[in-house]
Length: 223
Image (cartoon, rainbow, N blue to C red; front, side, top):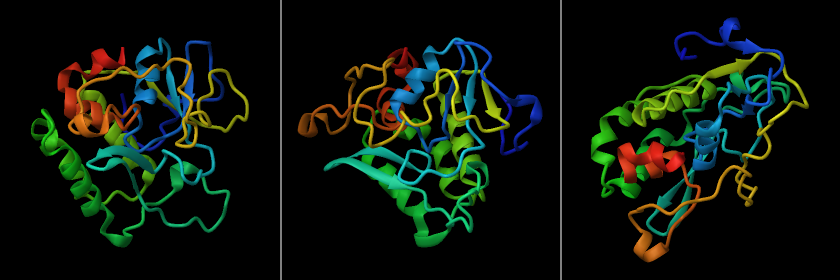
């Protein structure tokens, strides 16, 4: 798997169309929800990540949902407002406004500091909230690669080179906070959560909720 942080949009990893029904197309996401990782884990072909779409507001592209002490908590990566609506998602820049990195890290520590595996993974995640990434896409992909390494999951990833409005196995619009219906492939299965005794089980949170609570068993839950 090639990191876009090291090599942005290598043509060798790009496609013009999905080649078979085993391939899927998904949007980039900030610490994506479990449904996305379950979809990826069940995919036998290539997982194509969209680079050529325009930025979509209020989506998982720059936000994730974690388990706060009072319930689901949405945390958002601020972006620099594009000068044109035609700016591609791969070119969206992260804003340094509001000290958001410090706030996000504090939110993760507050939510998962008492979870079974947070201390084990803490040193791997902390640098992402210290380093200043310029592009949202690169930040998302670097975190995706980290999570995949942590759960010993090695998907076949590639990146689109052109935009297509209609393709087979298109999950670009289905993966959205406003879509309250579970994706066809995904049925939430309860697992241990820090605040479950008070809040009950919270389904389909960010992948870090599963990782910090279940550690190496995370991949088994996804499958």
